[in-house]
Length: 370
Image 1 (cartoon, rainbow, N blue to C red):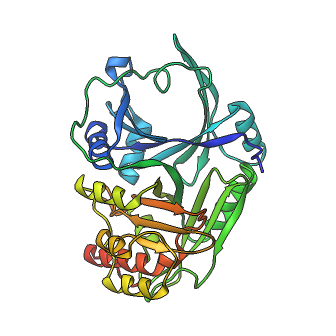
Image 2 (cartoon, rainbow, N blue to C red):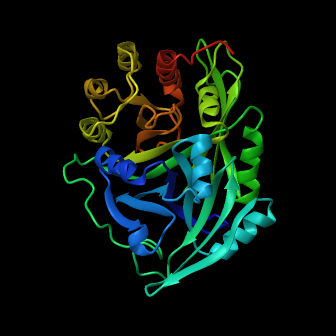
């Protein structure tokens, strides 16, 4: 079923960071991305600096402030630290997507705008998401230049030596919200963007000995966009969602899942590039062998690289989560491979995953009683 918003898929994700150049270097080196576009003083932009990094269909924009007057960026950083400010979807018509969303109660941030130069024009508009995040509607059908007006070719190659990570595209984007906000934001997506609720994890579905959470997954009706939304639930100790909300100081984007067609090779390359991943106990793989899942991969290889496996629904998926990539225990990445049409999000792995997160919480002194 085609989506009524004319959404073609994810386009890019933009991070606000304290130092764009240093963070862009990490993305290039650790994730194996290429810096393909740049904006800053050399391109006529005086208040901020941005680097666009790409690999296959994955696009990450890293933006930092150049002046104290860059108030939007500085305010975001002061409150949240480095994190995702906005994610963009490519649409057939920016005007149509924006007007339809706002008519259905979306909160407008940027009315449709046209940005042009000698290479043509792009169109953008944005609506509010969670506290300080945004969804951008983006169309560049009439633009021949690099990314968008204001950008030029990068003036240097950030990284010359790195492993090929085989990353392909954004699979899904996950938000963490306060208690009693999950249903409101799921309804927001469903009404404003004509999404549907695909999965609903209720009380007891996602829990450990110490903590629990609730989660809903919303998606476009043609499944090109998928967005889980998590909120904390009552438990003995502080959950990973509560830890995120406390250190991020609000609701926001917790992690981005990036797809690959060969997760074993991708994880091996990412580890060589310096990416840190959550640890998985040996008992997980003992249990995995007993389940005798019909998977193509050698379980010994999955164990060697710490990769999780789940057969929820049709097909099966393989996944692994990085540790938080910044100073605060907030944002992280997930690497995912969907095999034979898998549609889920690894419910069978939640127990092992959240226990692993709790071990890191305990090291940080944040696995405390509620």
